[in-house]
Amino acid sequence: MKSEKSQFIENLEDWKYREAYIRASINVNLPSQIRALRLKQEMTQKEFAAVADMKQPRISAMEKPGATKFNIETLIRVAAAFKVGLIVKFVPVSEMLAWENGFSQDSFNVPTFEQDMALQRASASVFEGKPSPTPVWFLFDSPGTPRAFPEVSHNTTMTPPPPDAGSVSTAGGIQYQQRLG
Image 1: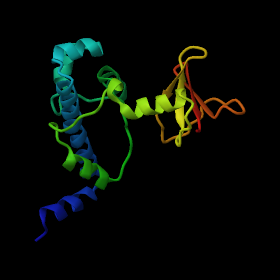
Image 2 (image 1 turned 45 degrees about the vertical axis):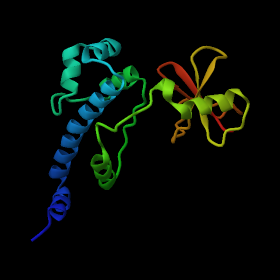
Image 3 (image 1 turned 90 degrees about the vertical axis):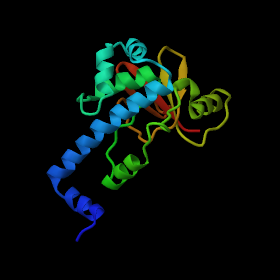
Image 4 (image 1 turned 180 degrees about the horizontal axis):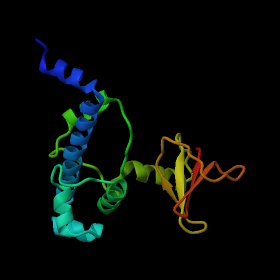
C-alpha cells in the first residue's frame, strides 16, 4: 500500500492533476497573502480598496480562496498599493510544495517600500559613492534624477545602452539603467 505522500507525487505526474493542483494552490495562497498583507498593514478592506483604487467587494472577493481569477495587472495593482514587490516565476514543483508547506498567514510579513532595508542600503551606497558588489538599477523618472533599485536577477536590455552606461531598459516610457559597482 502506497503512502499518502507517494500517491500524491504519483498523481502529480499526470499533467491534468498537476494543472489542477497548481490552480488550486494559487487560488488558496494568493488570497491568504493578500489578507495577511492587509492585516499586517492594519487596514480594513475598505481602506485598502481606497488605496488600490478598487471597490471593497472586490477586495473581499480577492481574499476568499477561489473567488477571483487573478491576472497579472491586478496583482501589480495590489503589490503597488501594499508598497511591496511582486515576483511571478516558474519553479520546480518541489520548490512550490516547500513554499506552501512553510507558508503561514500569521507569520507572513513583507516589508513595505519604506521598511525595505536592502533597498535603503543599495540606495545609500550608490548615492554616497560607495562601490556596490552587485548591480544596481536606476530609474530615470526625470532628467538627471536617478533613483536606485536593488539588484535584479536579469539583464534584459530593451533599448541599446550608451557605450559606458551599463544596461538600459525602457518600459512604459520609463528608462531603467543598470550599472555595476
